[in-house]
Length: 65
Image (tube, rainbow, N blue to C red; front, side, top):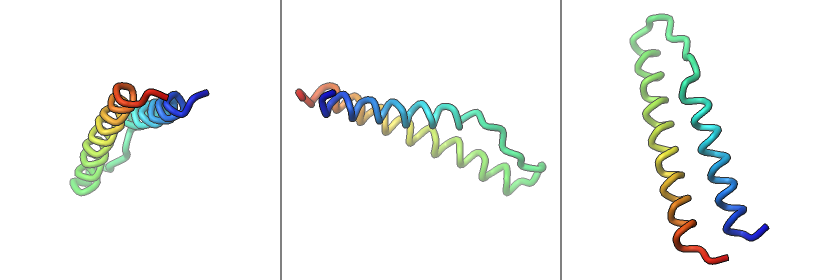
């Protein structure tokens, strides 16, 4: 396998794992602070997945290996 495909496979694997955790139920016990942490977790998860997708697109378009 070439290095480009190895990188793309790894990025896709990480995106897939993030997507699996996005919908995880977080037990907040109706605690406002815990609810805020759960919301922050989803926000960070989404932002990170978007960055990984962006890197994947960059590799796809710019790497020739």
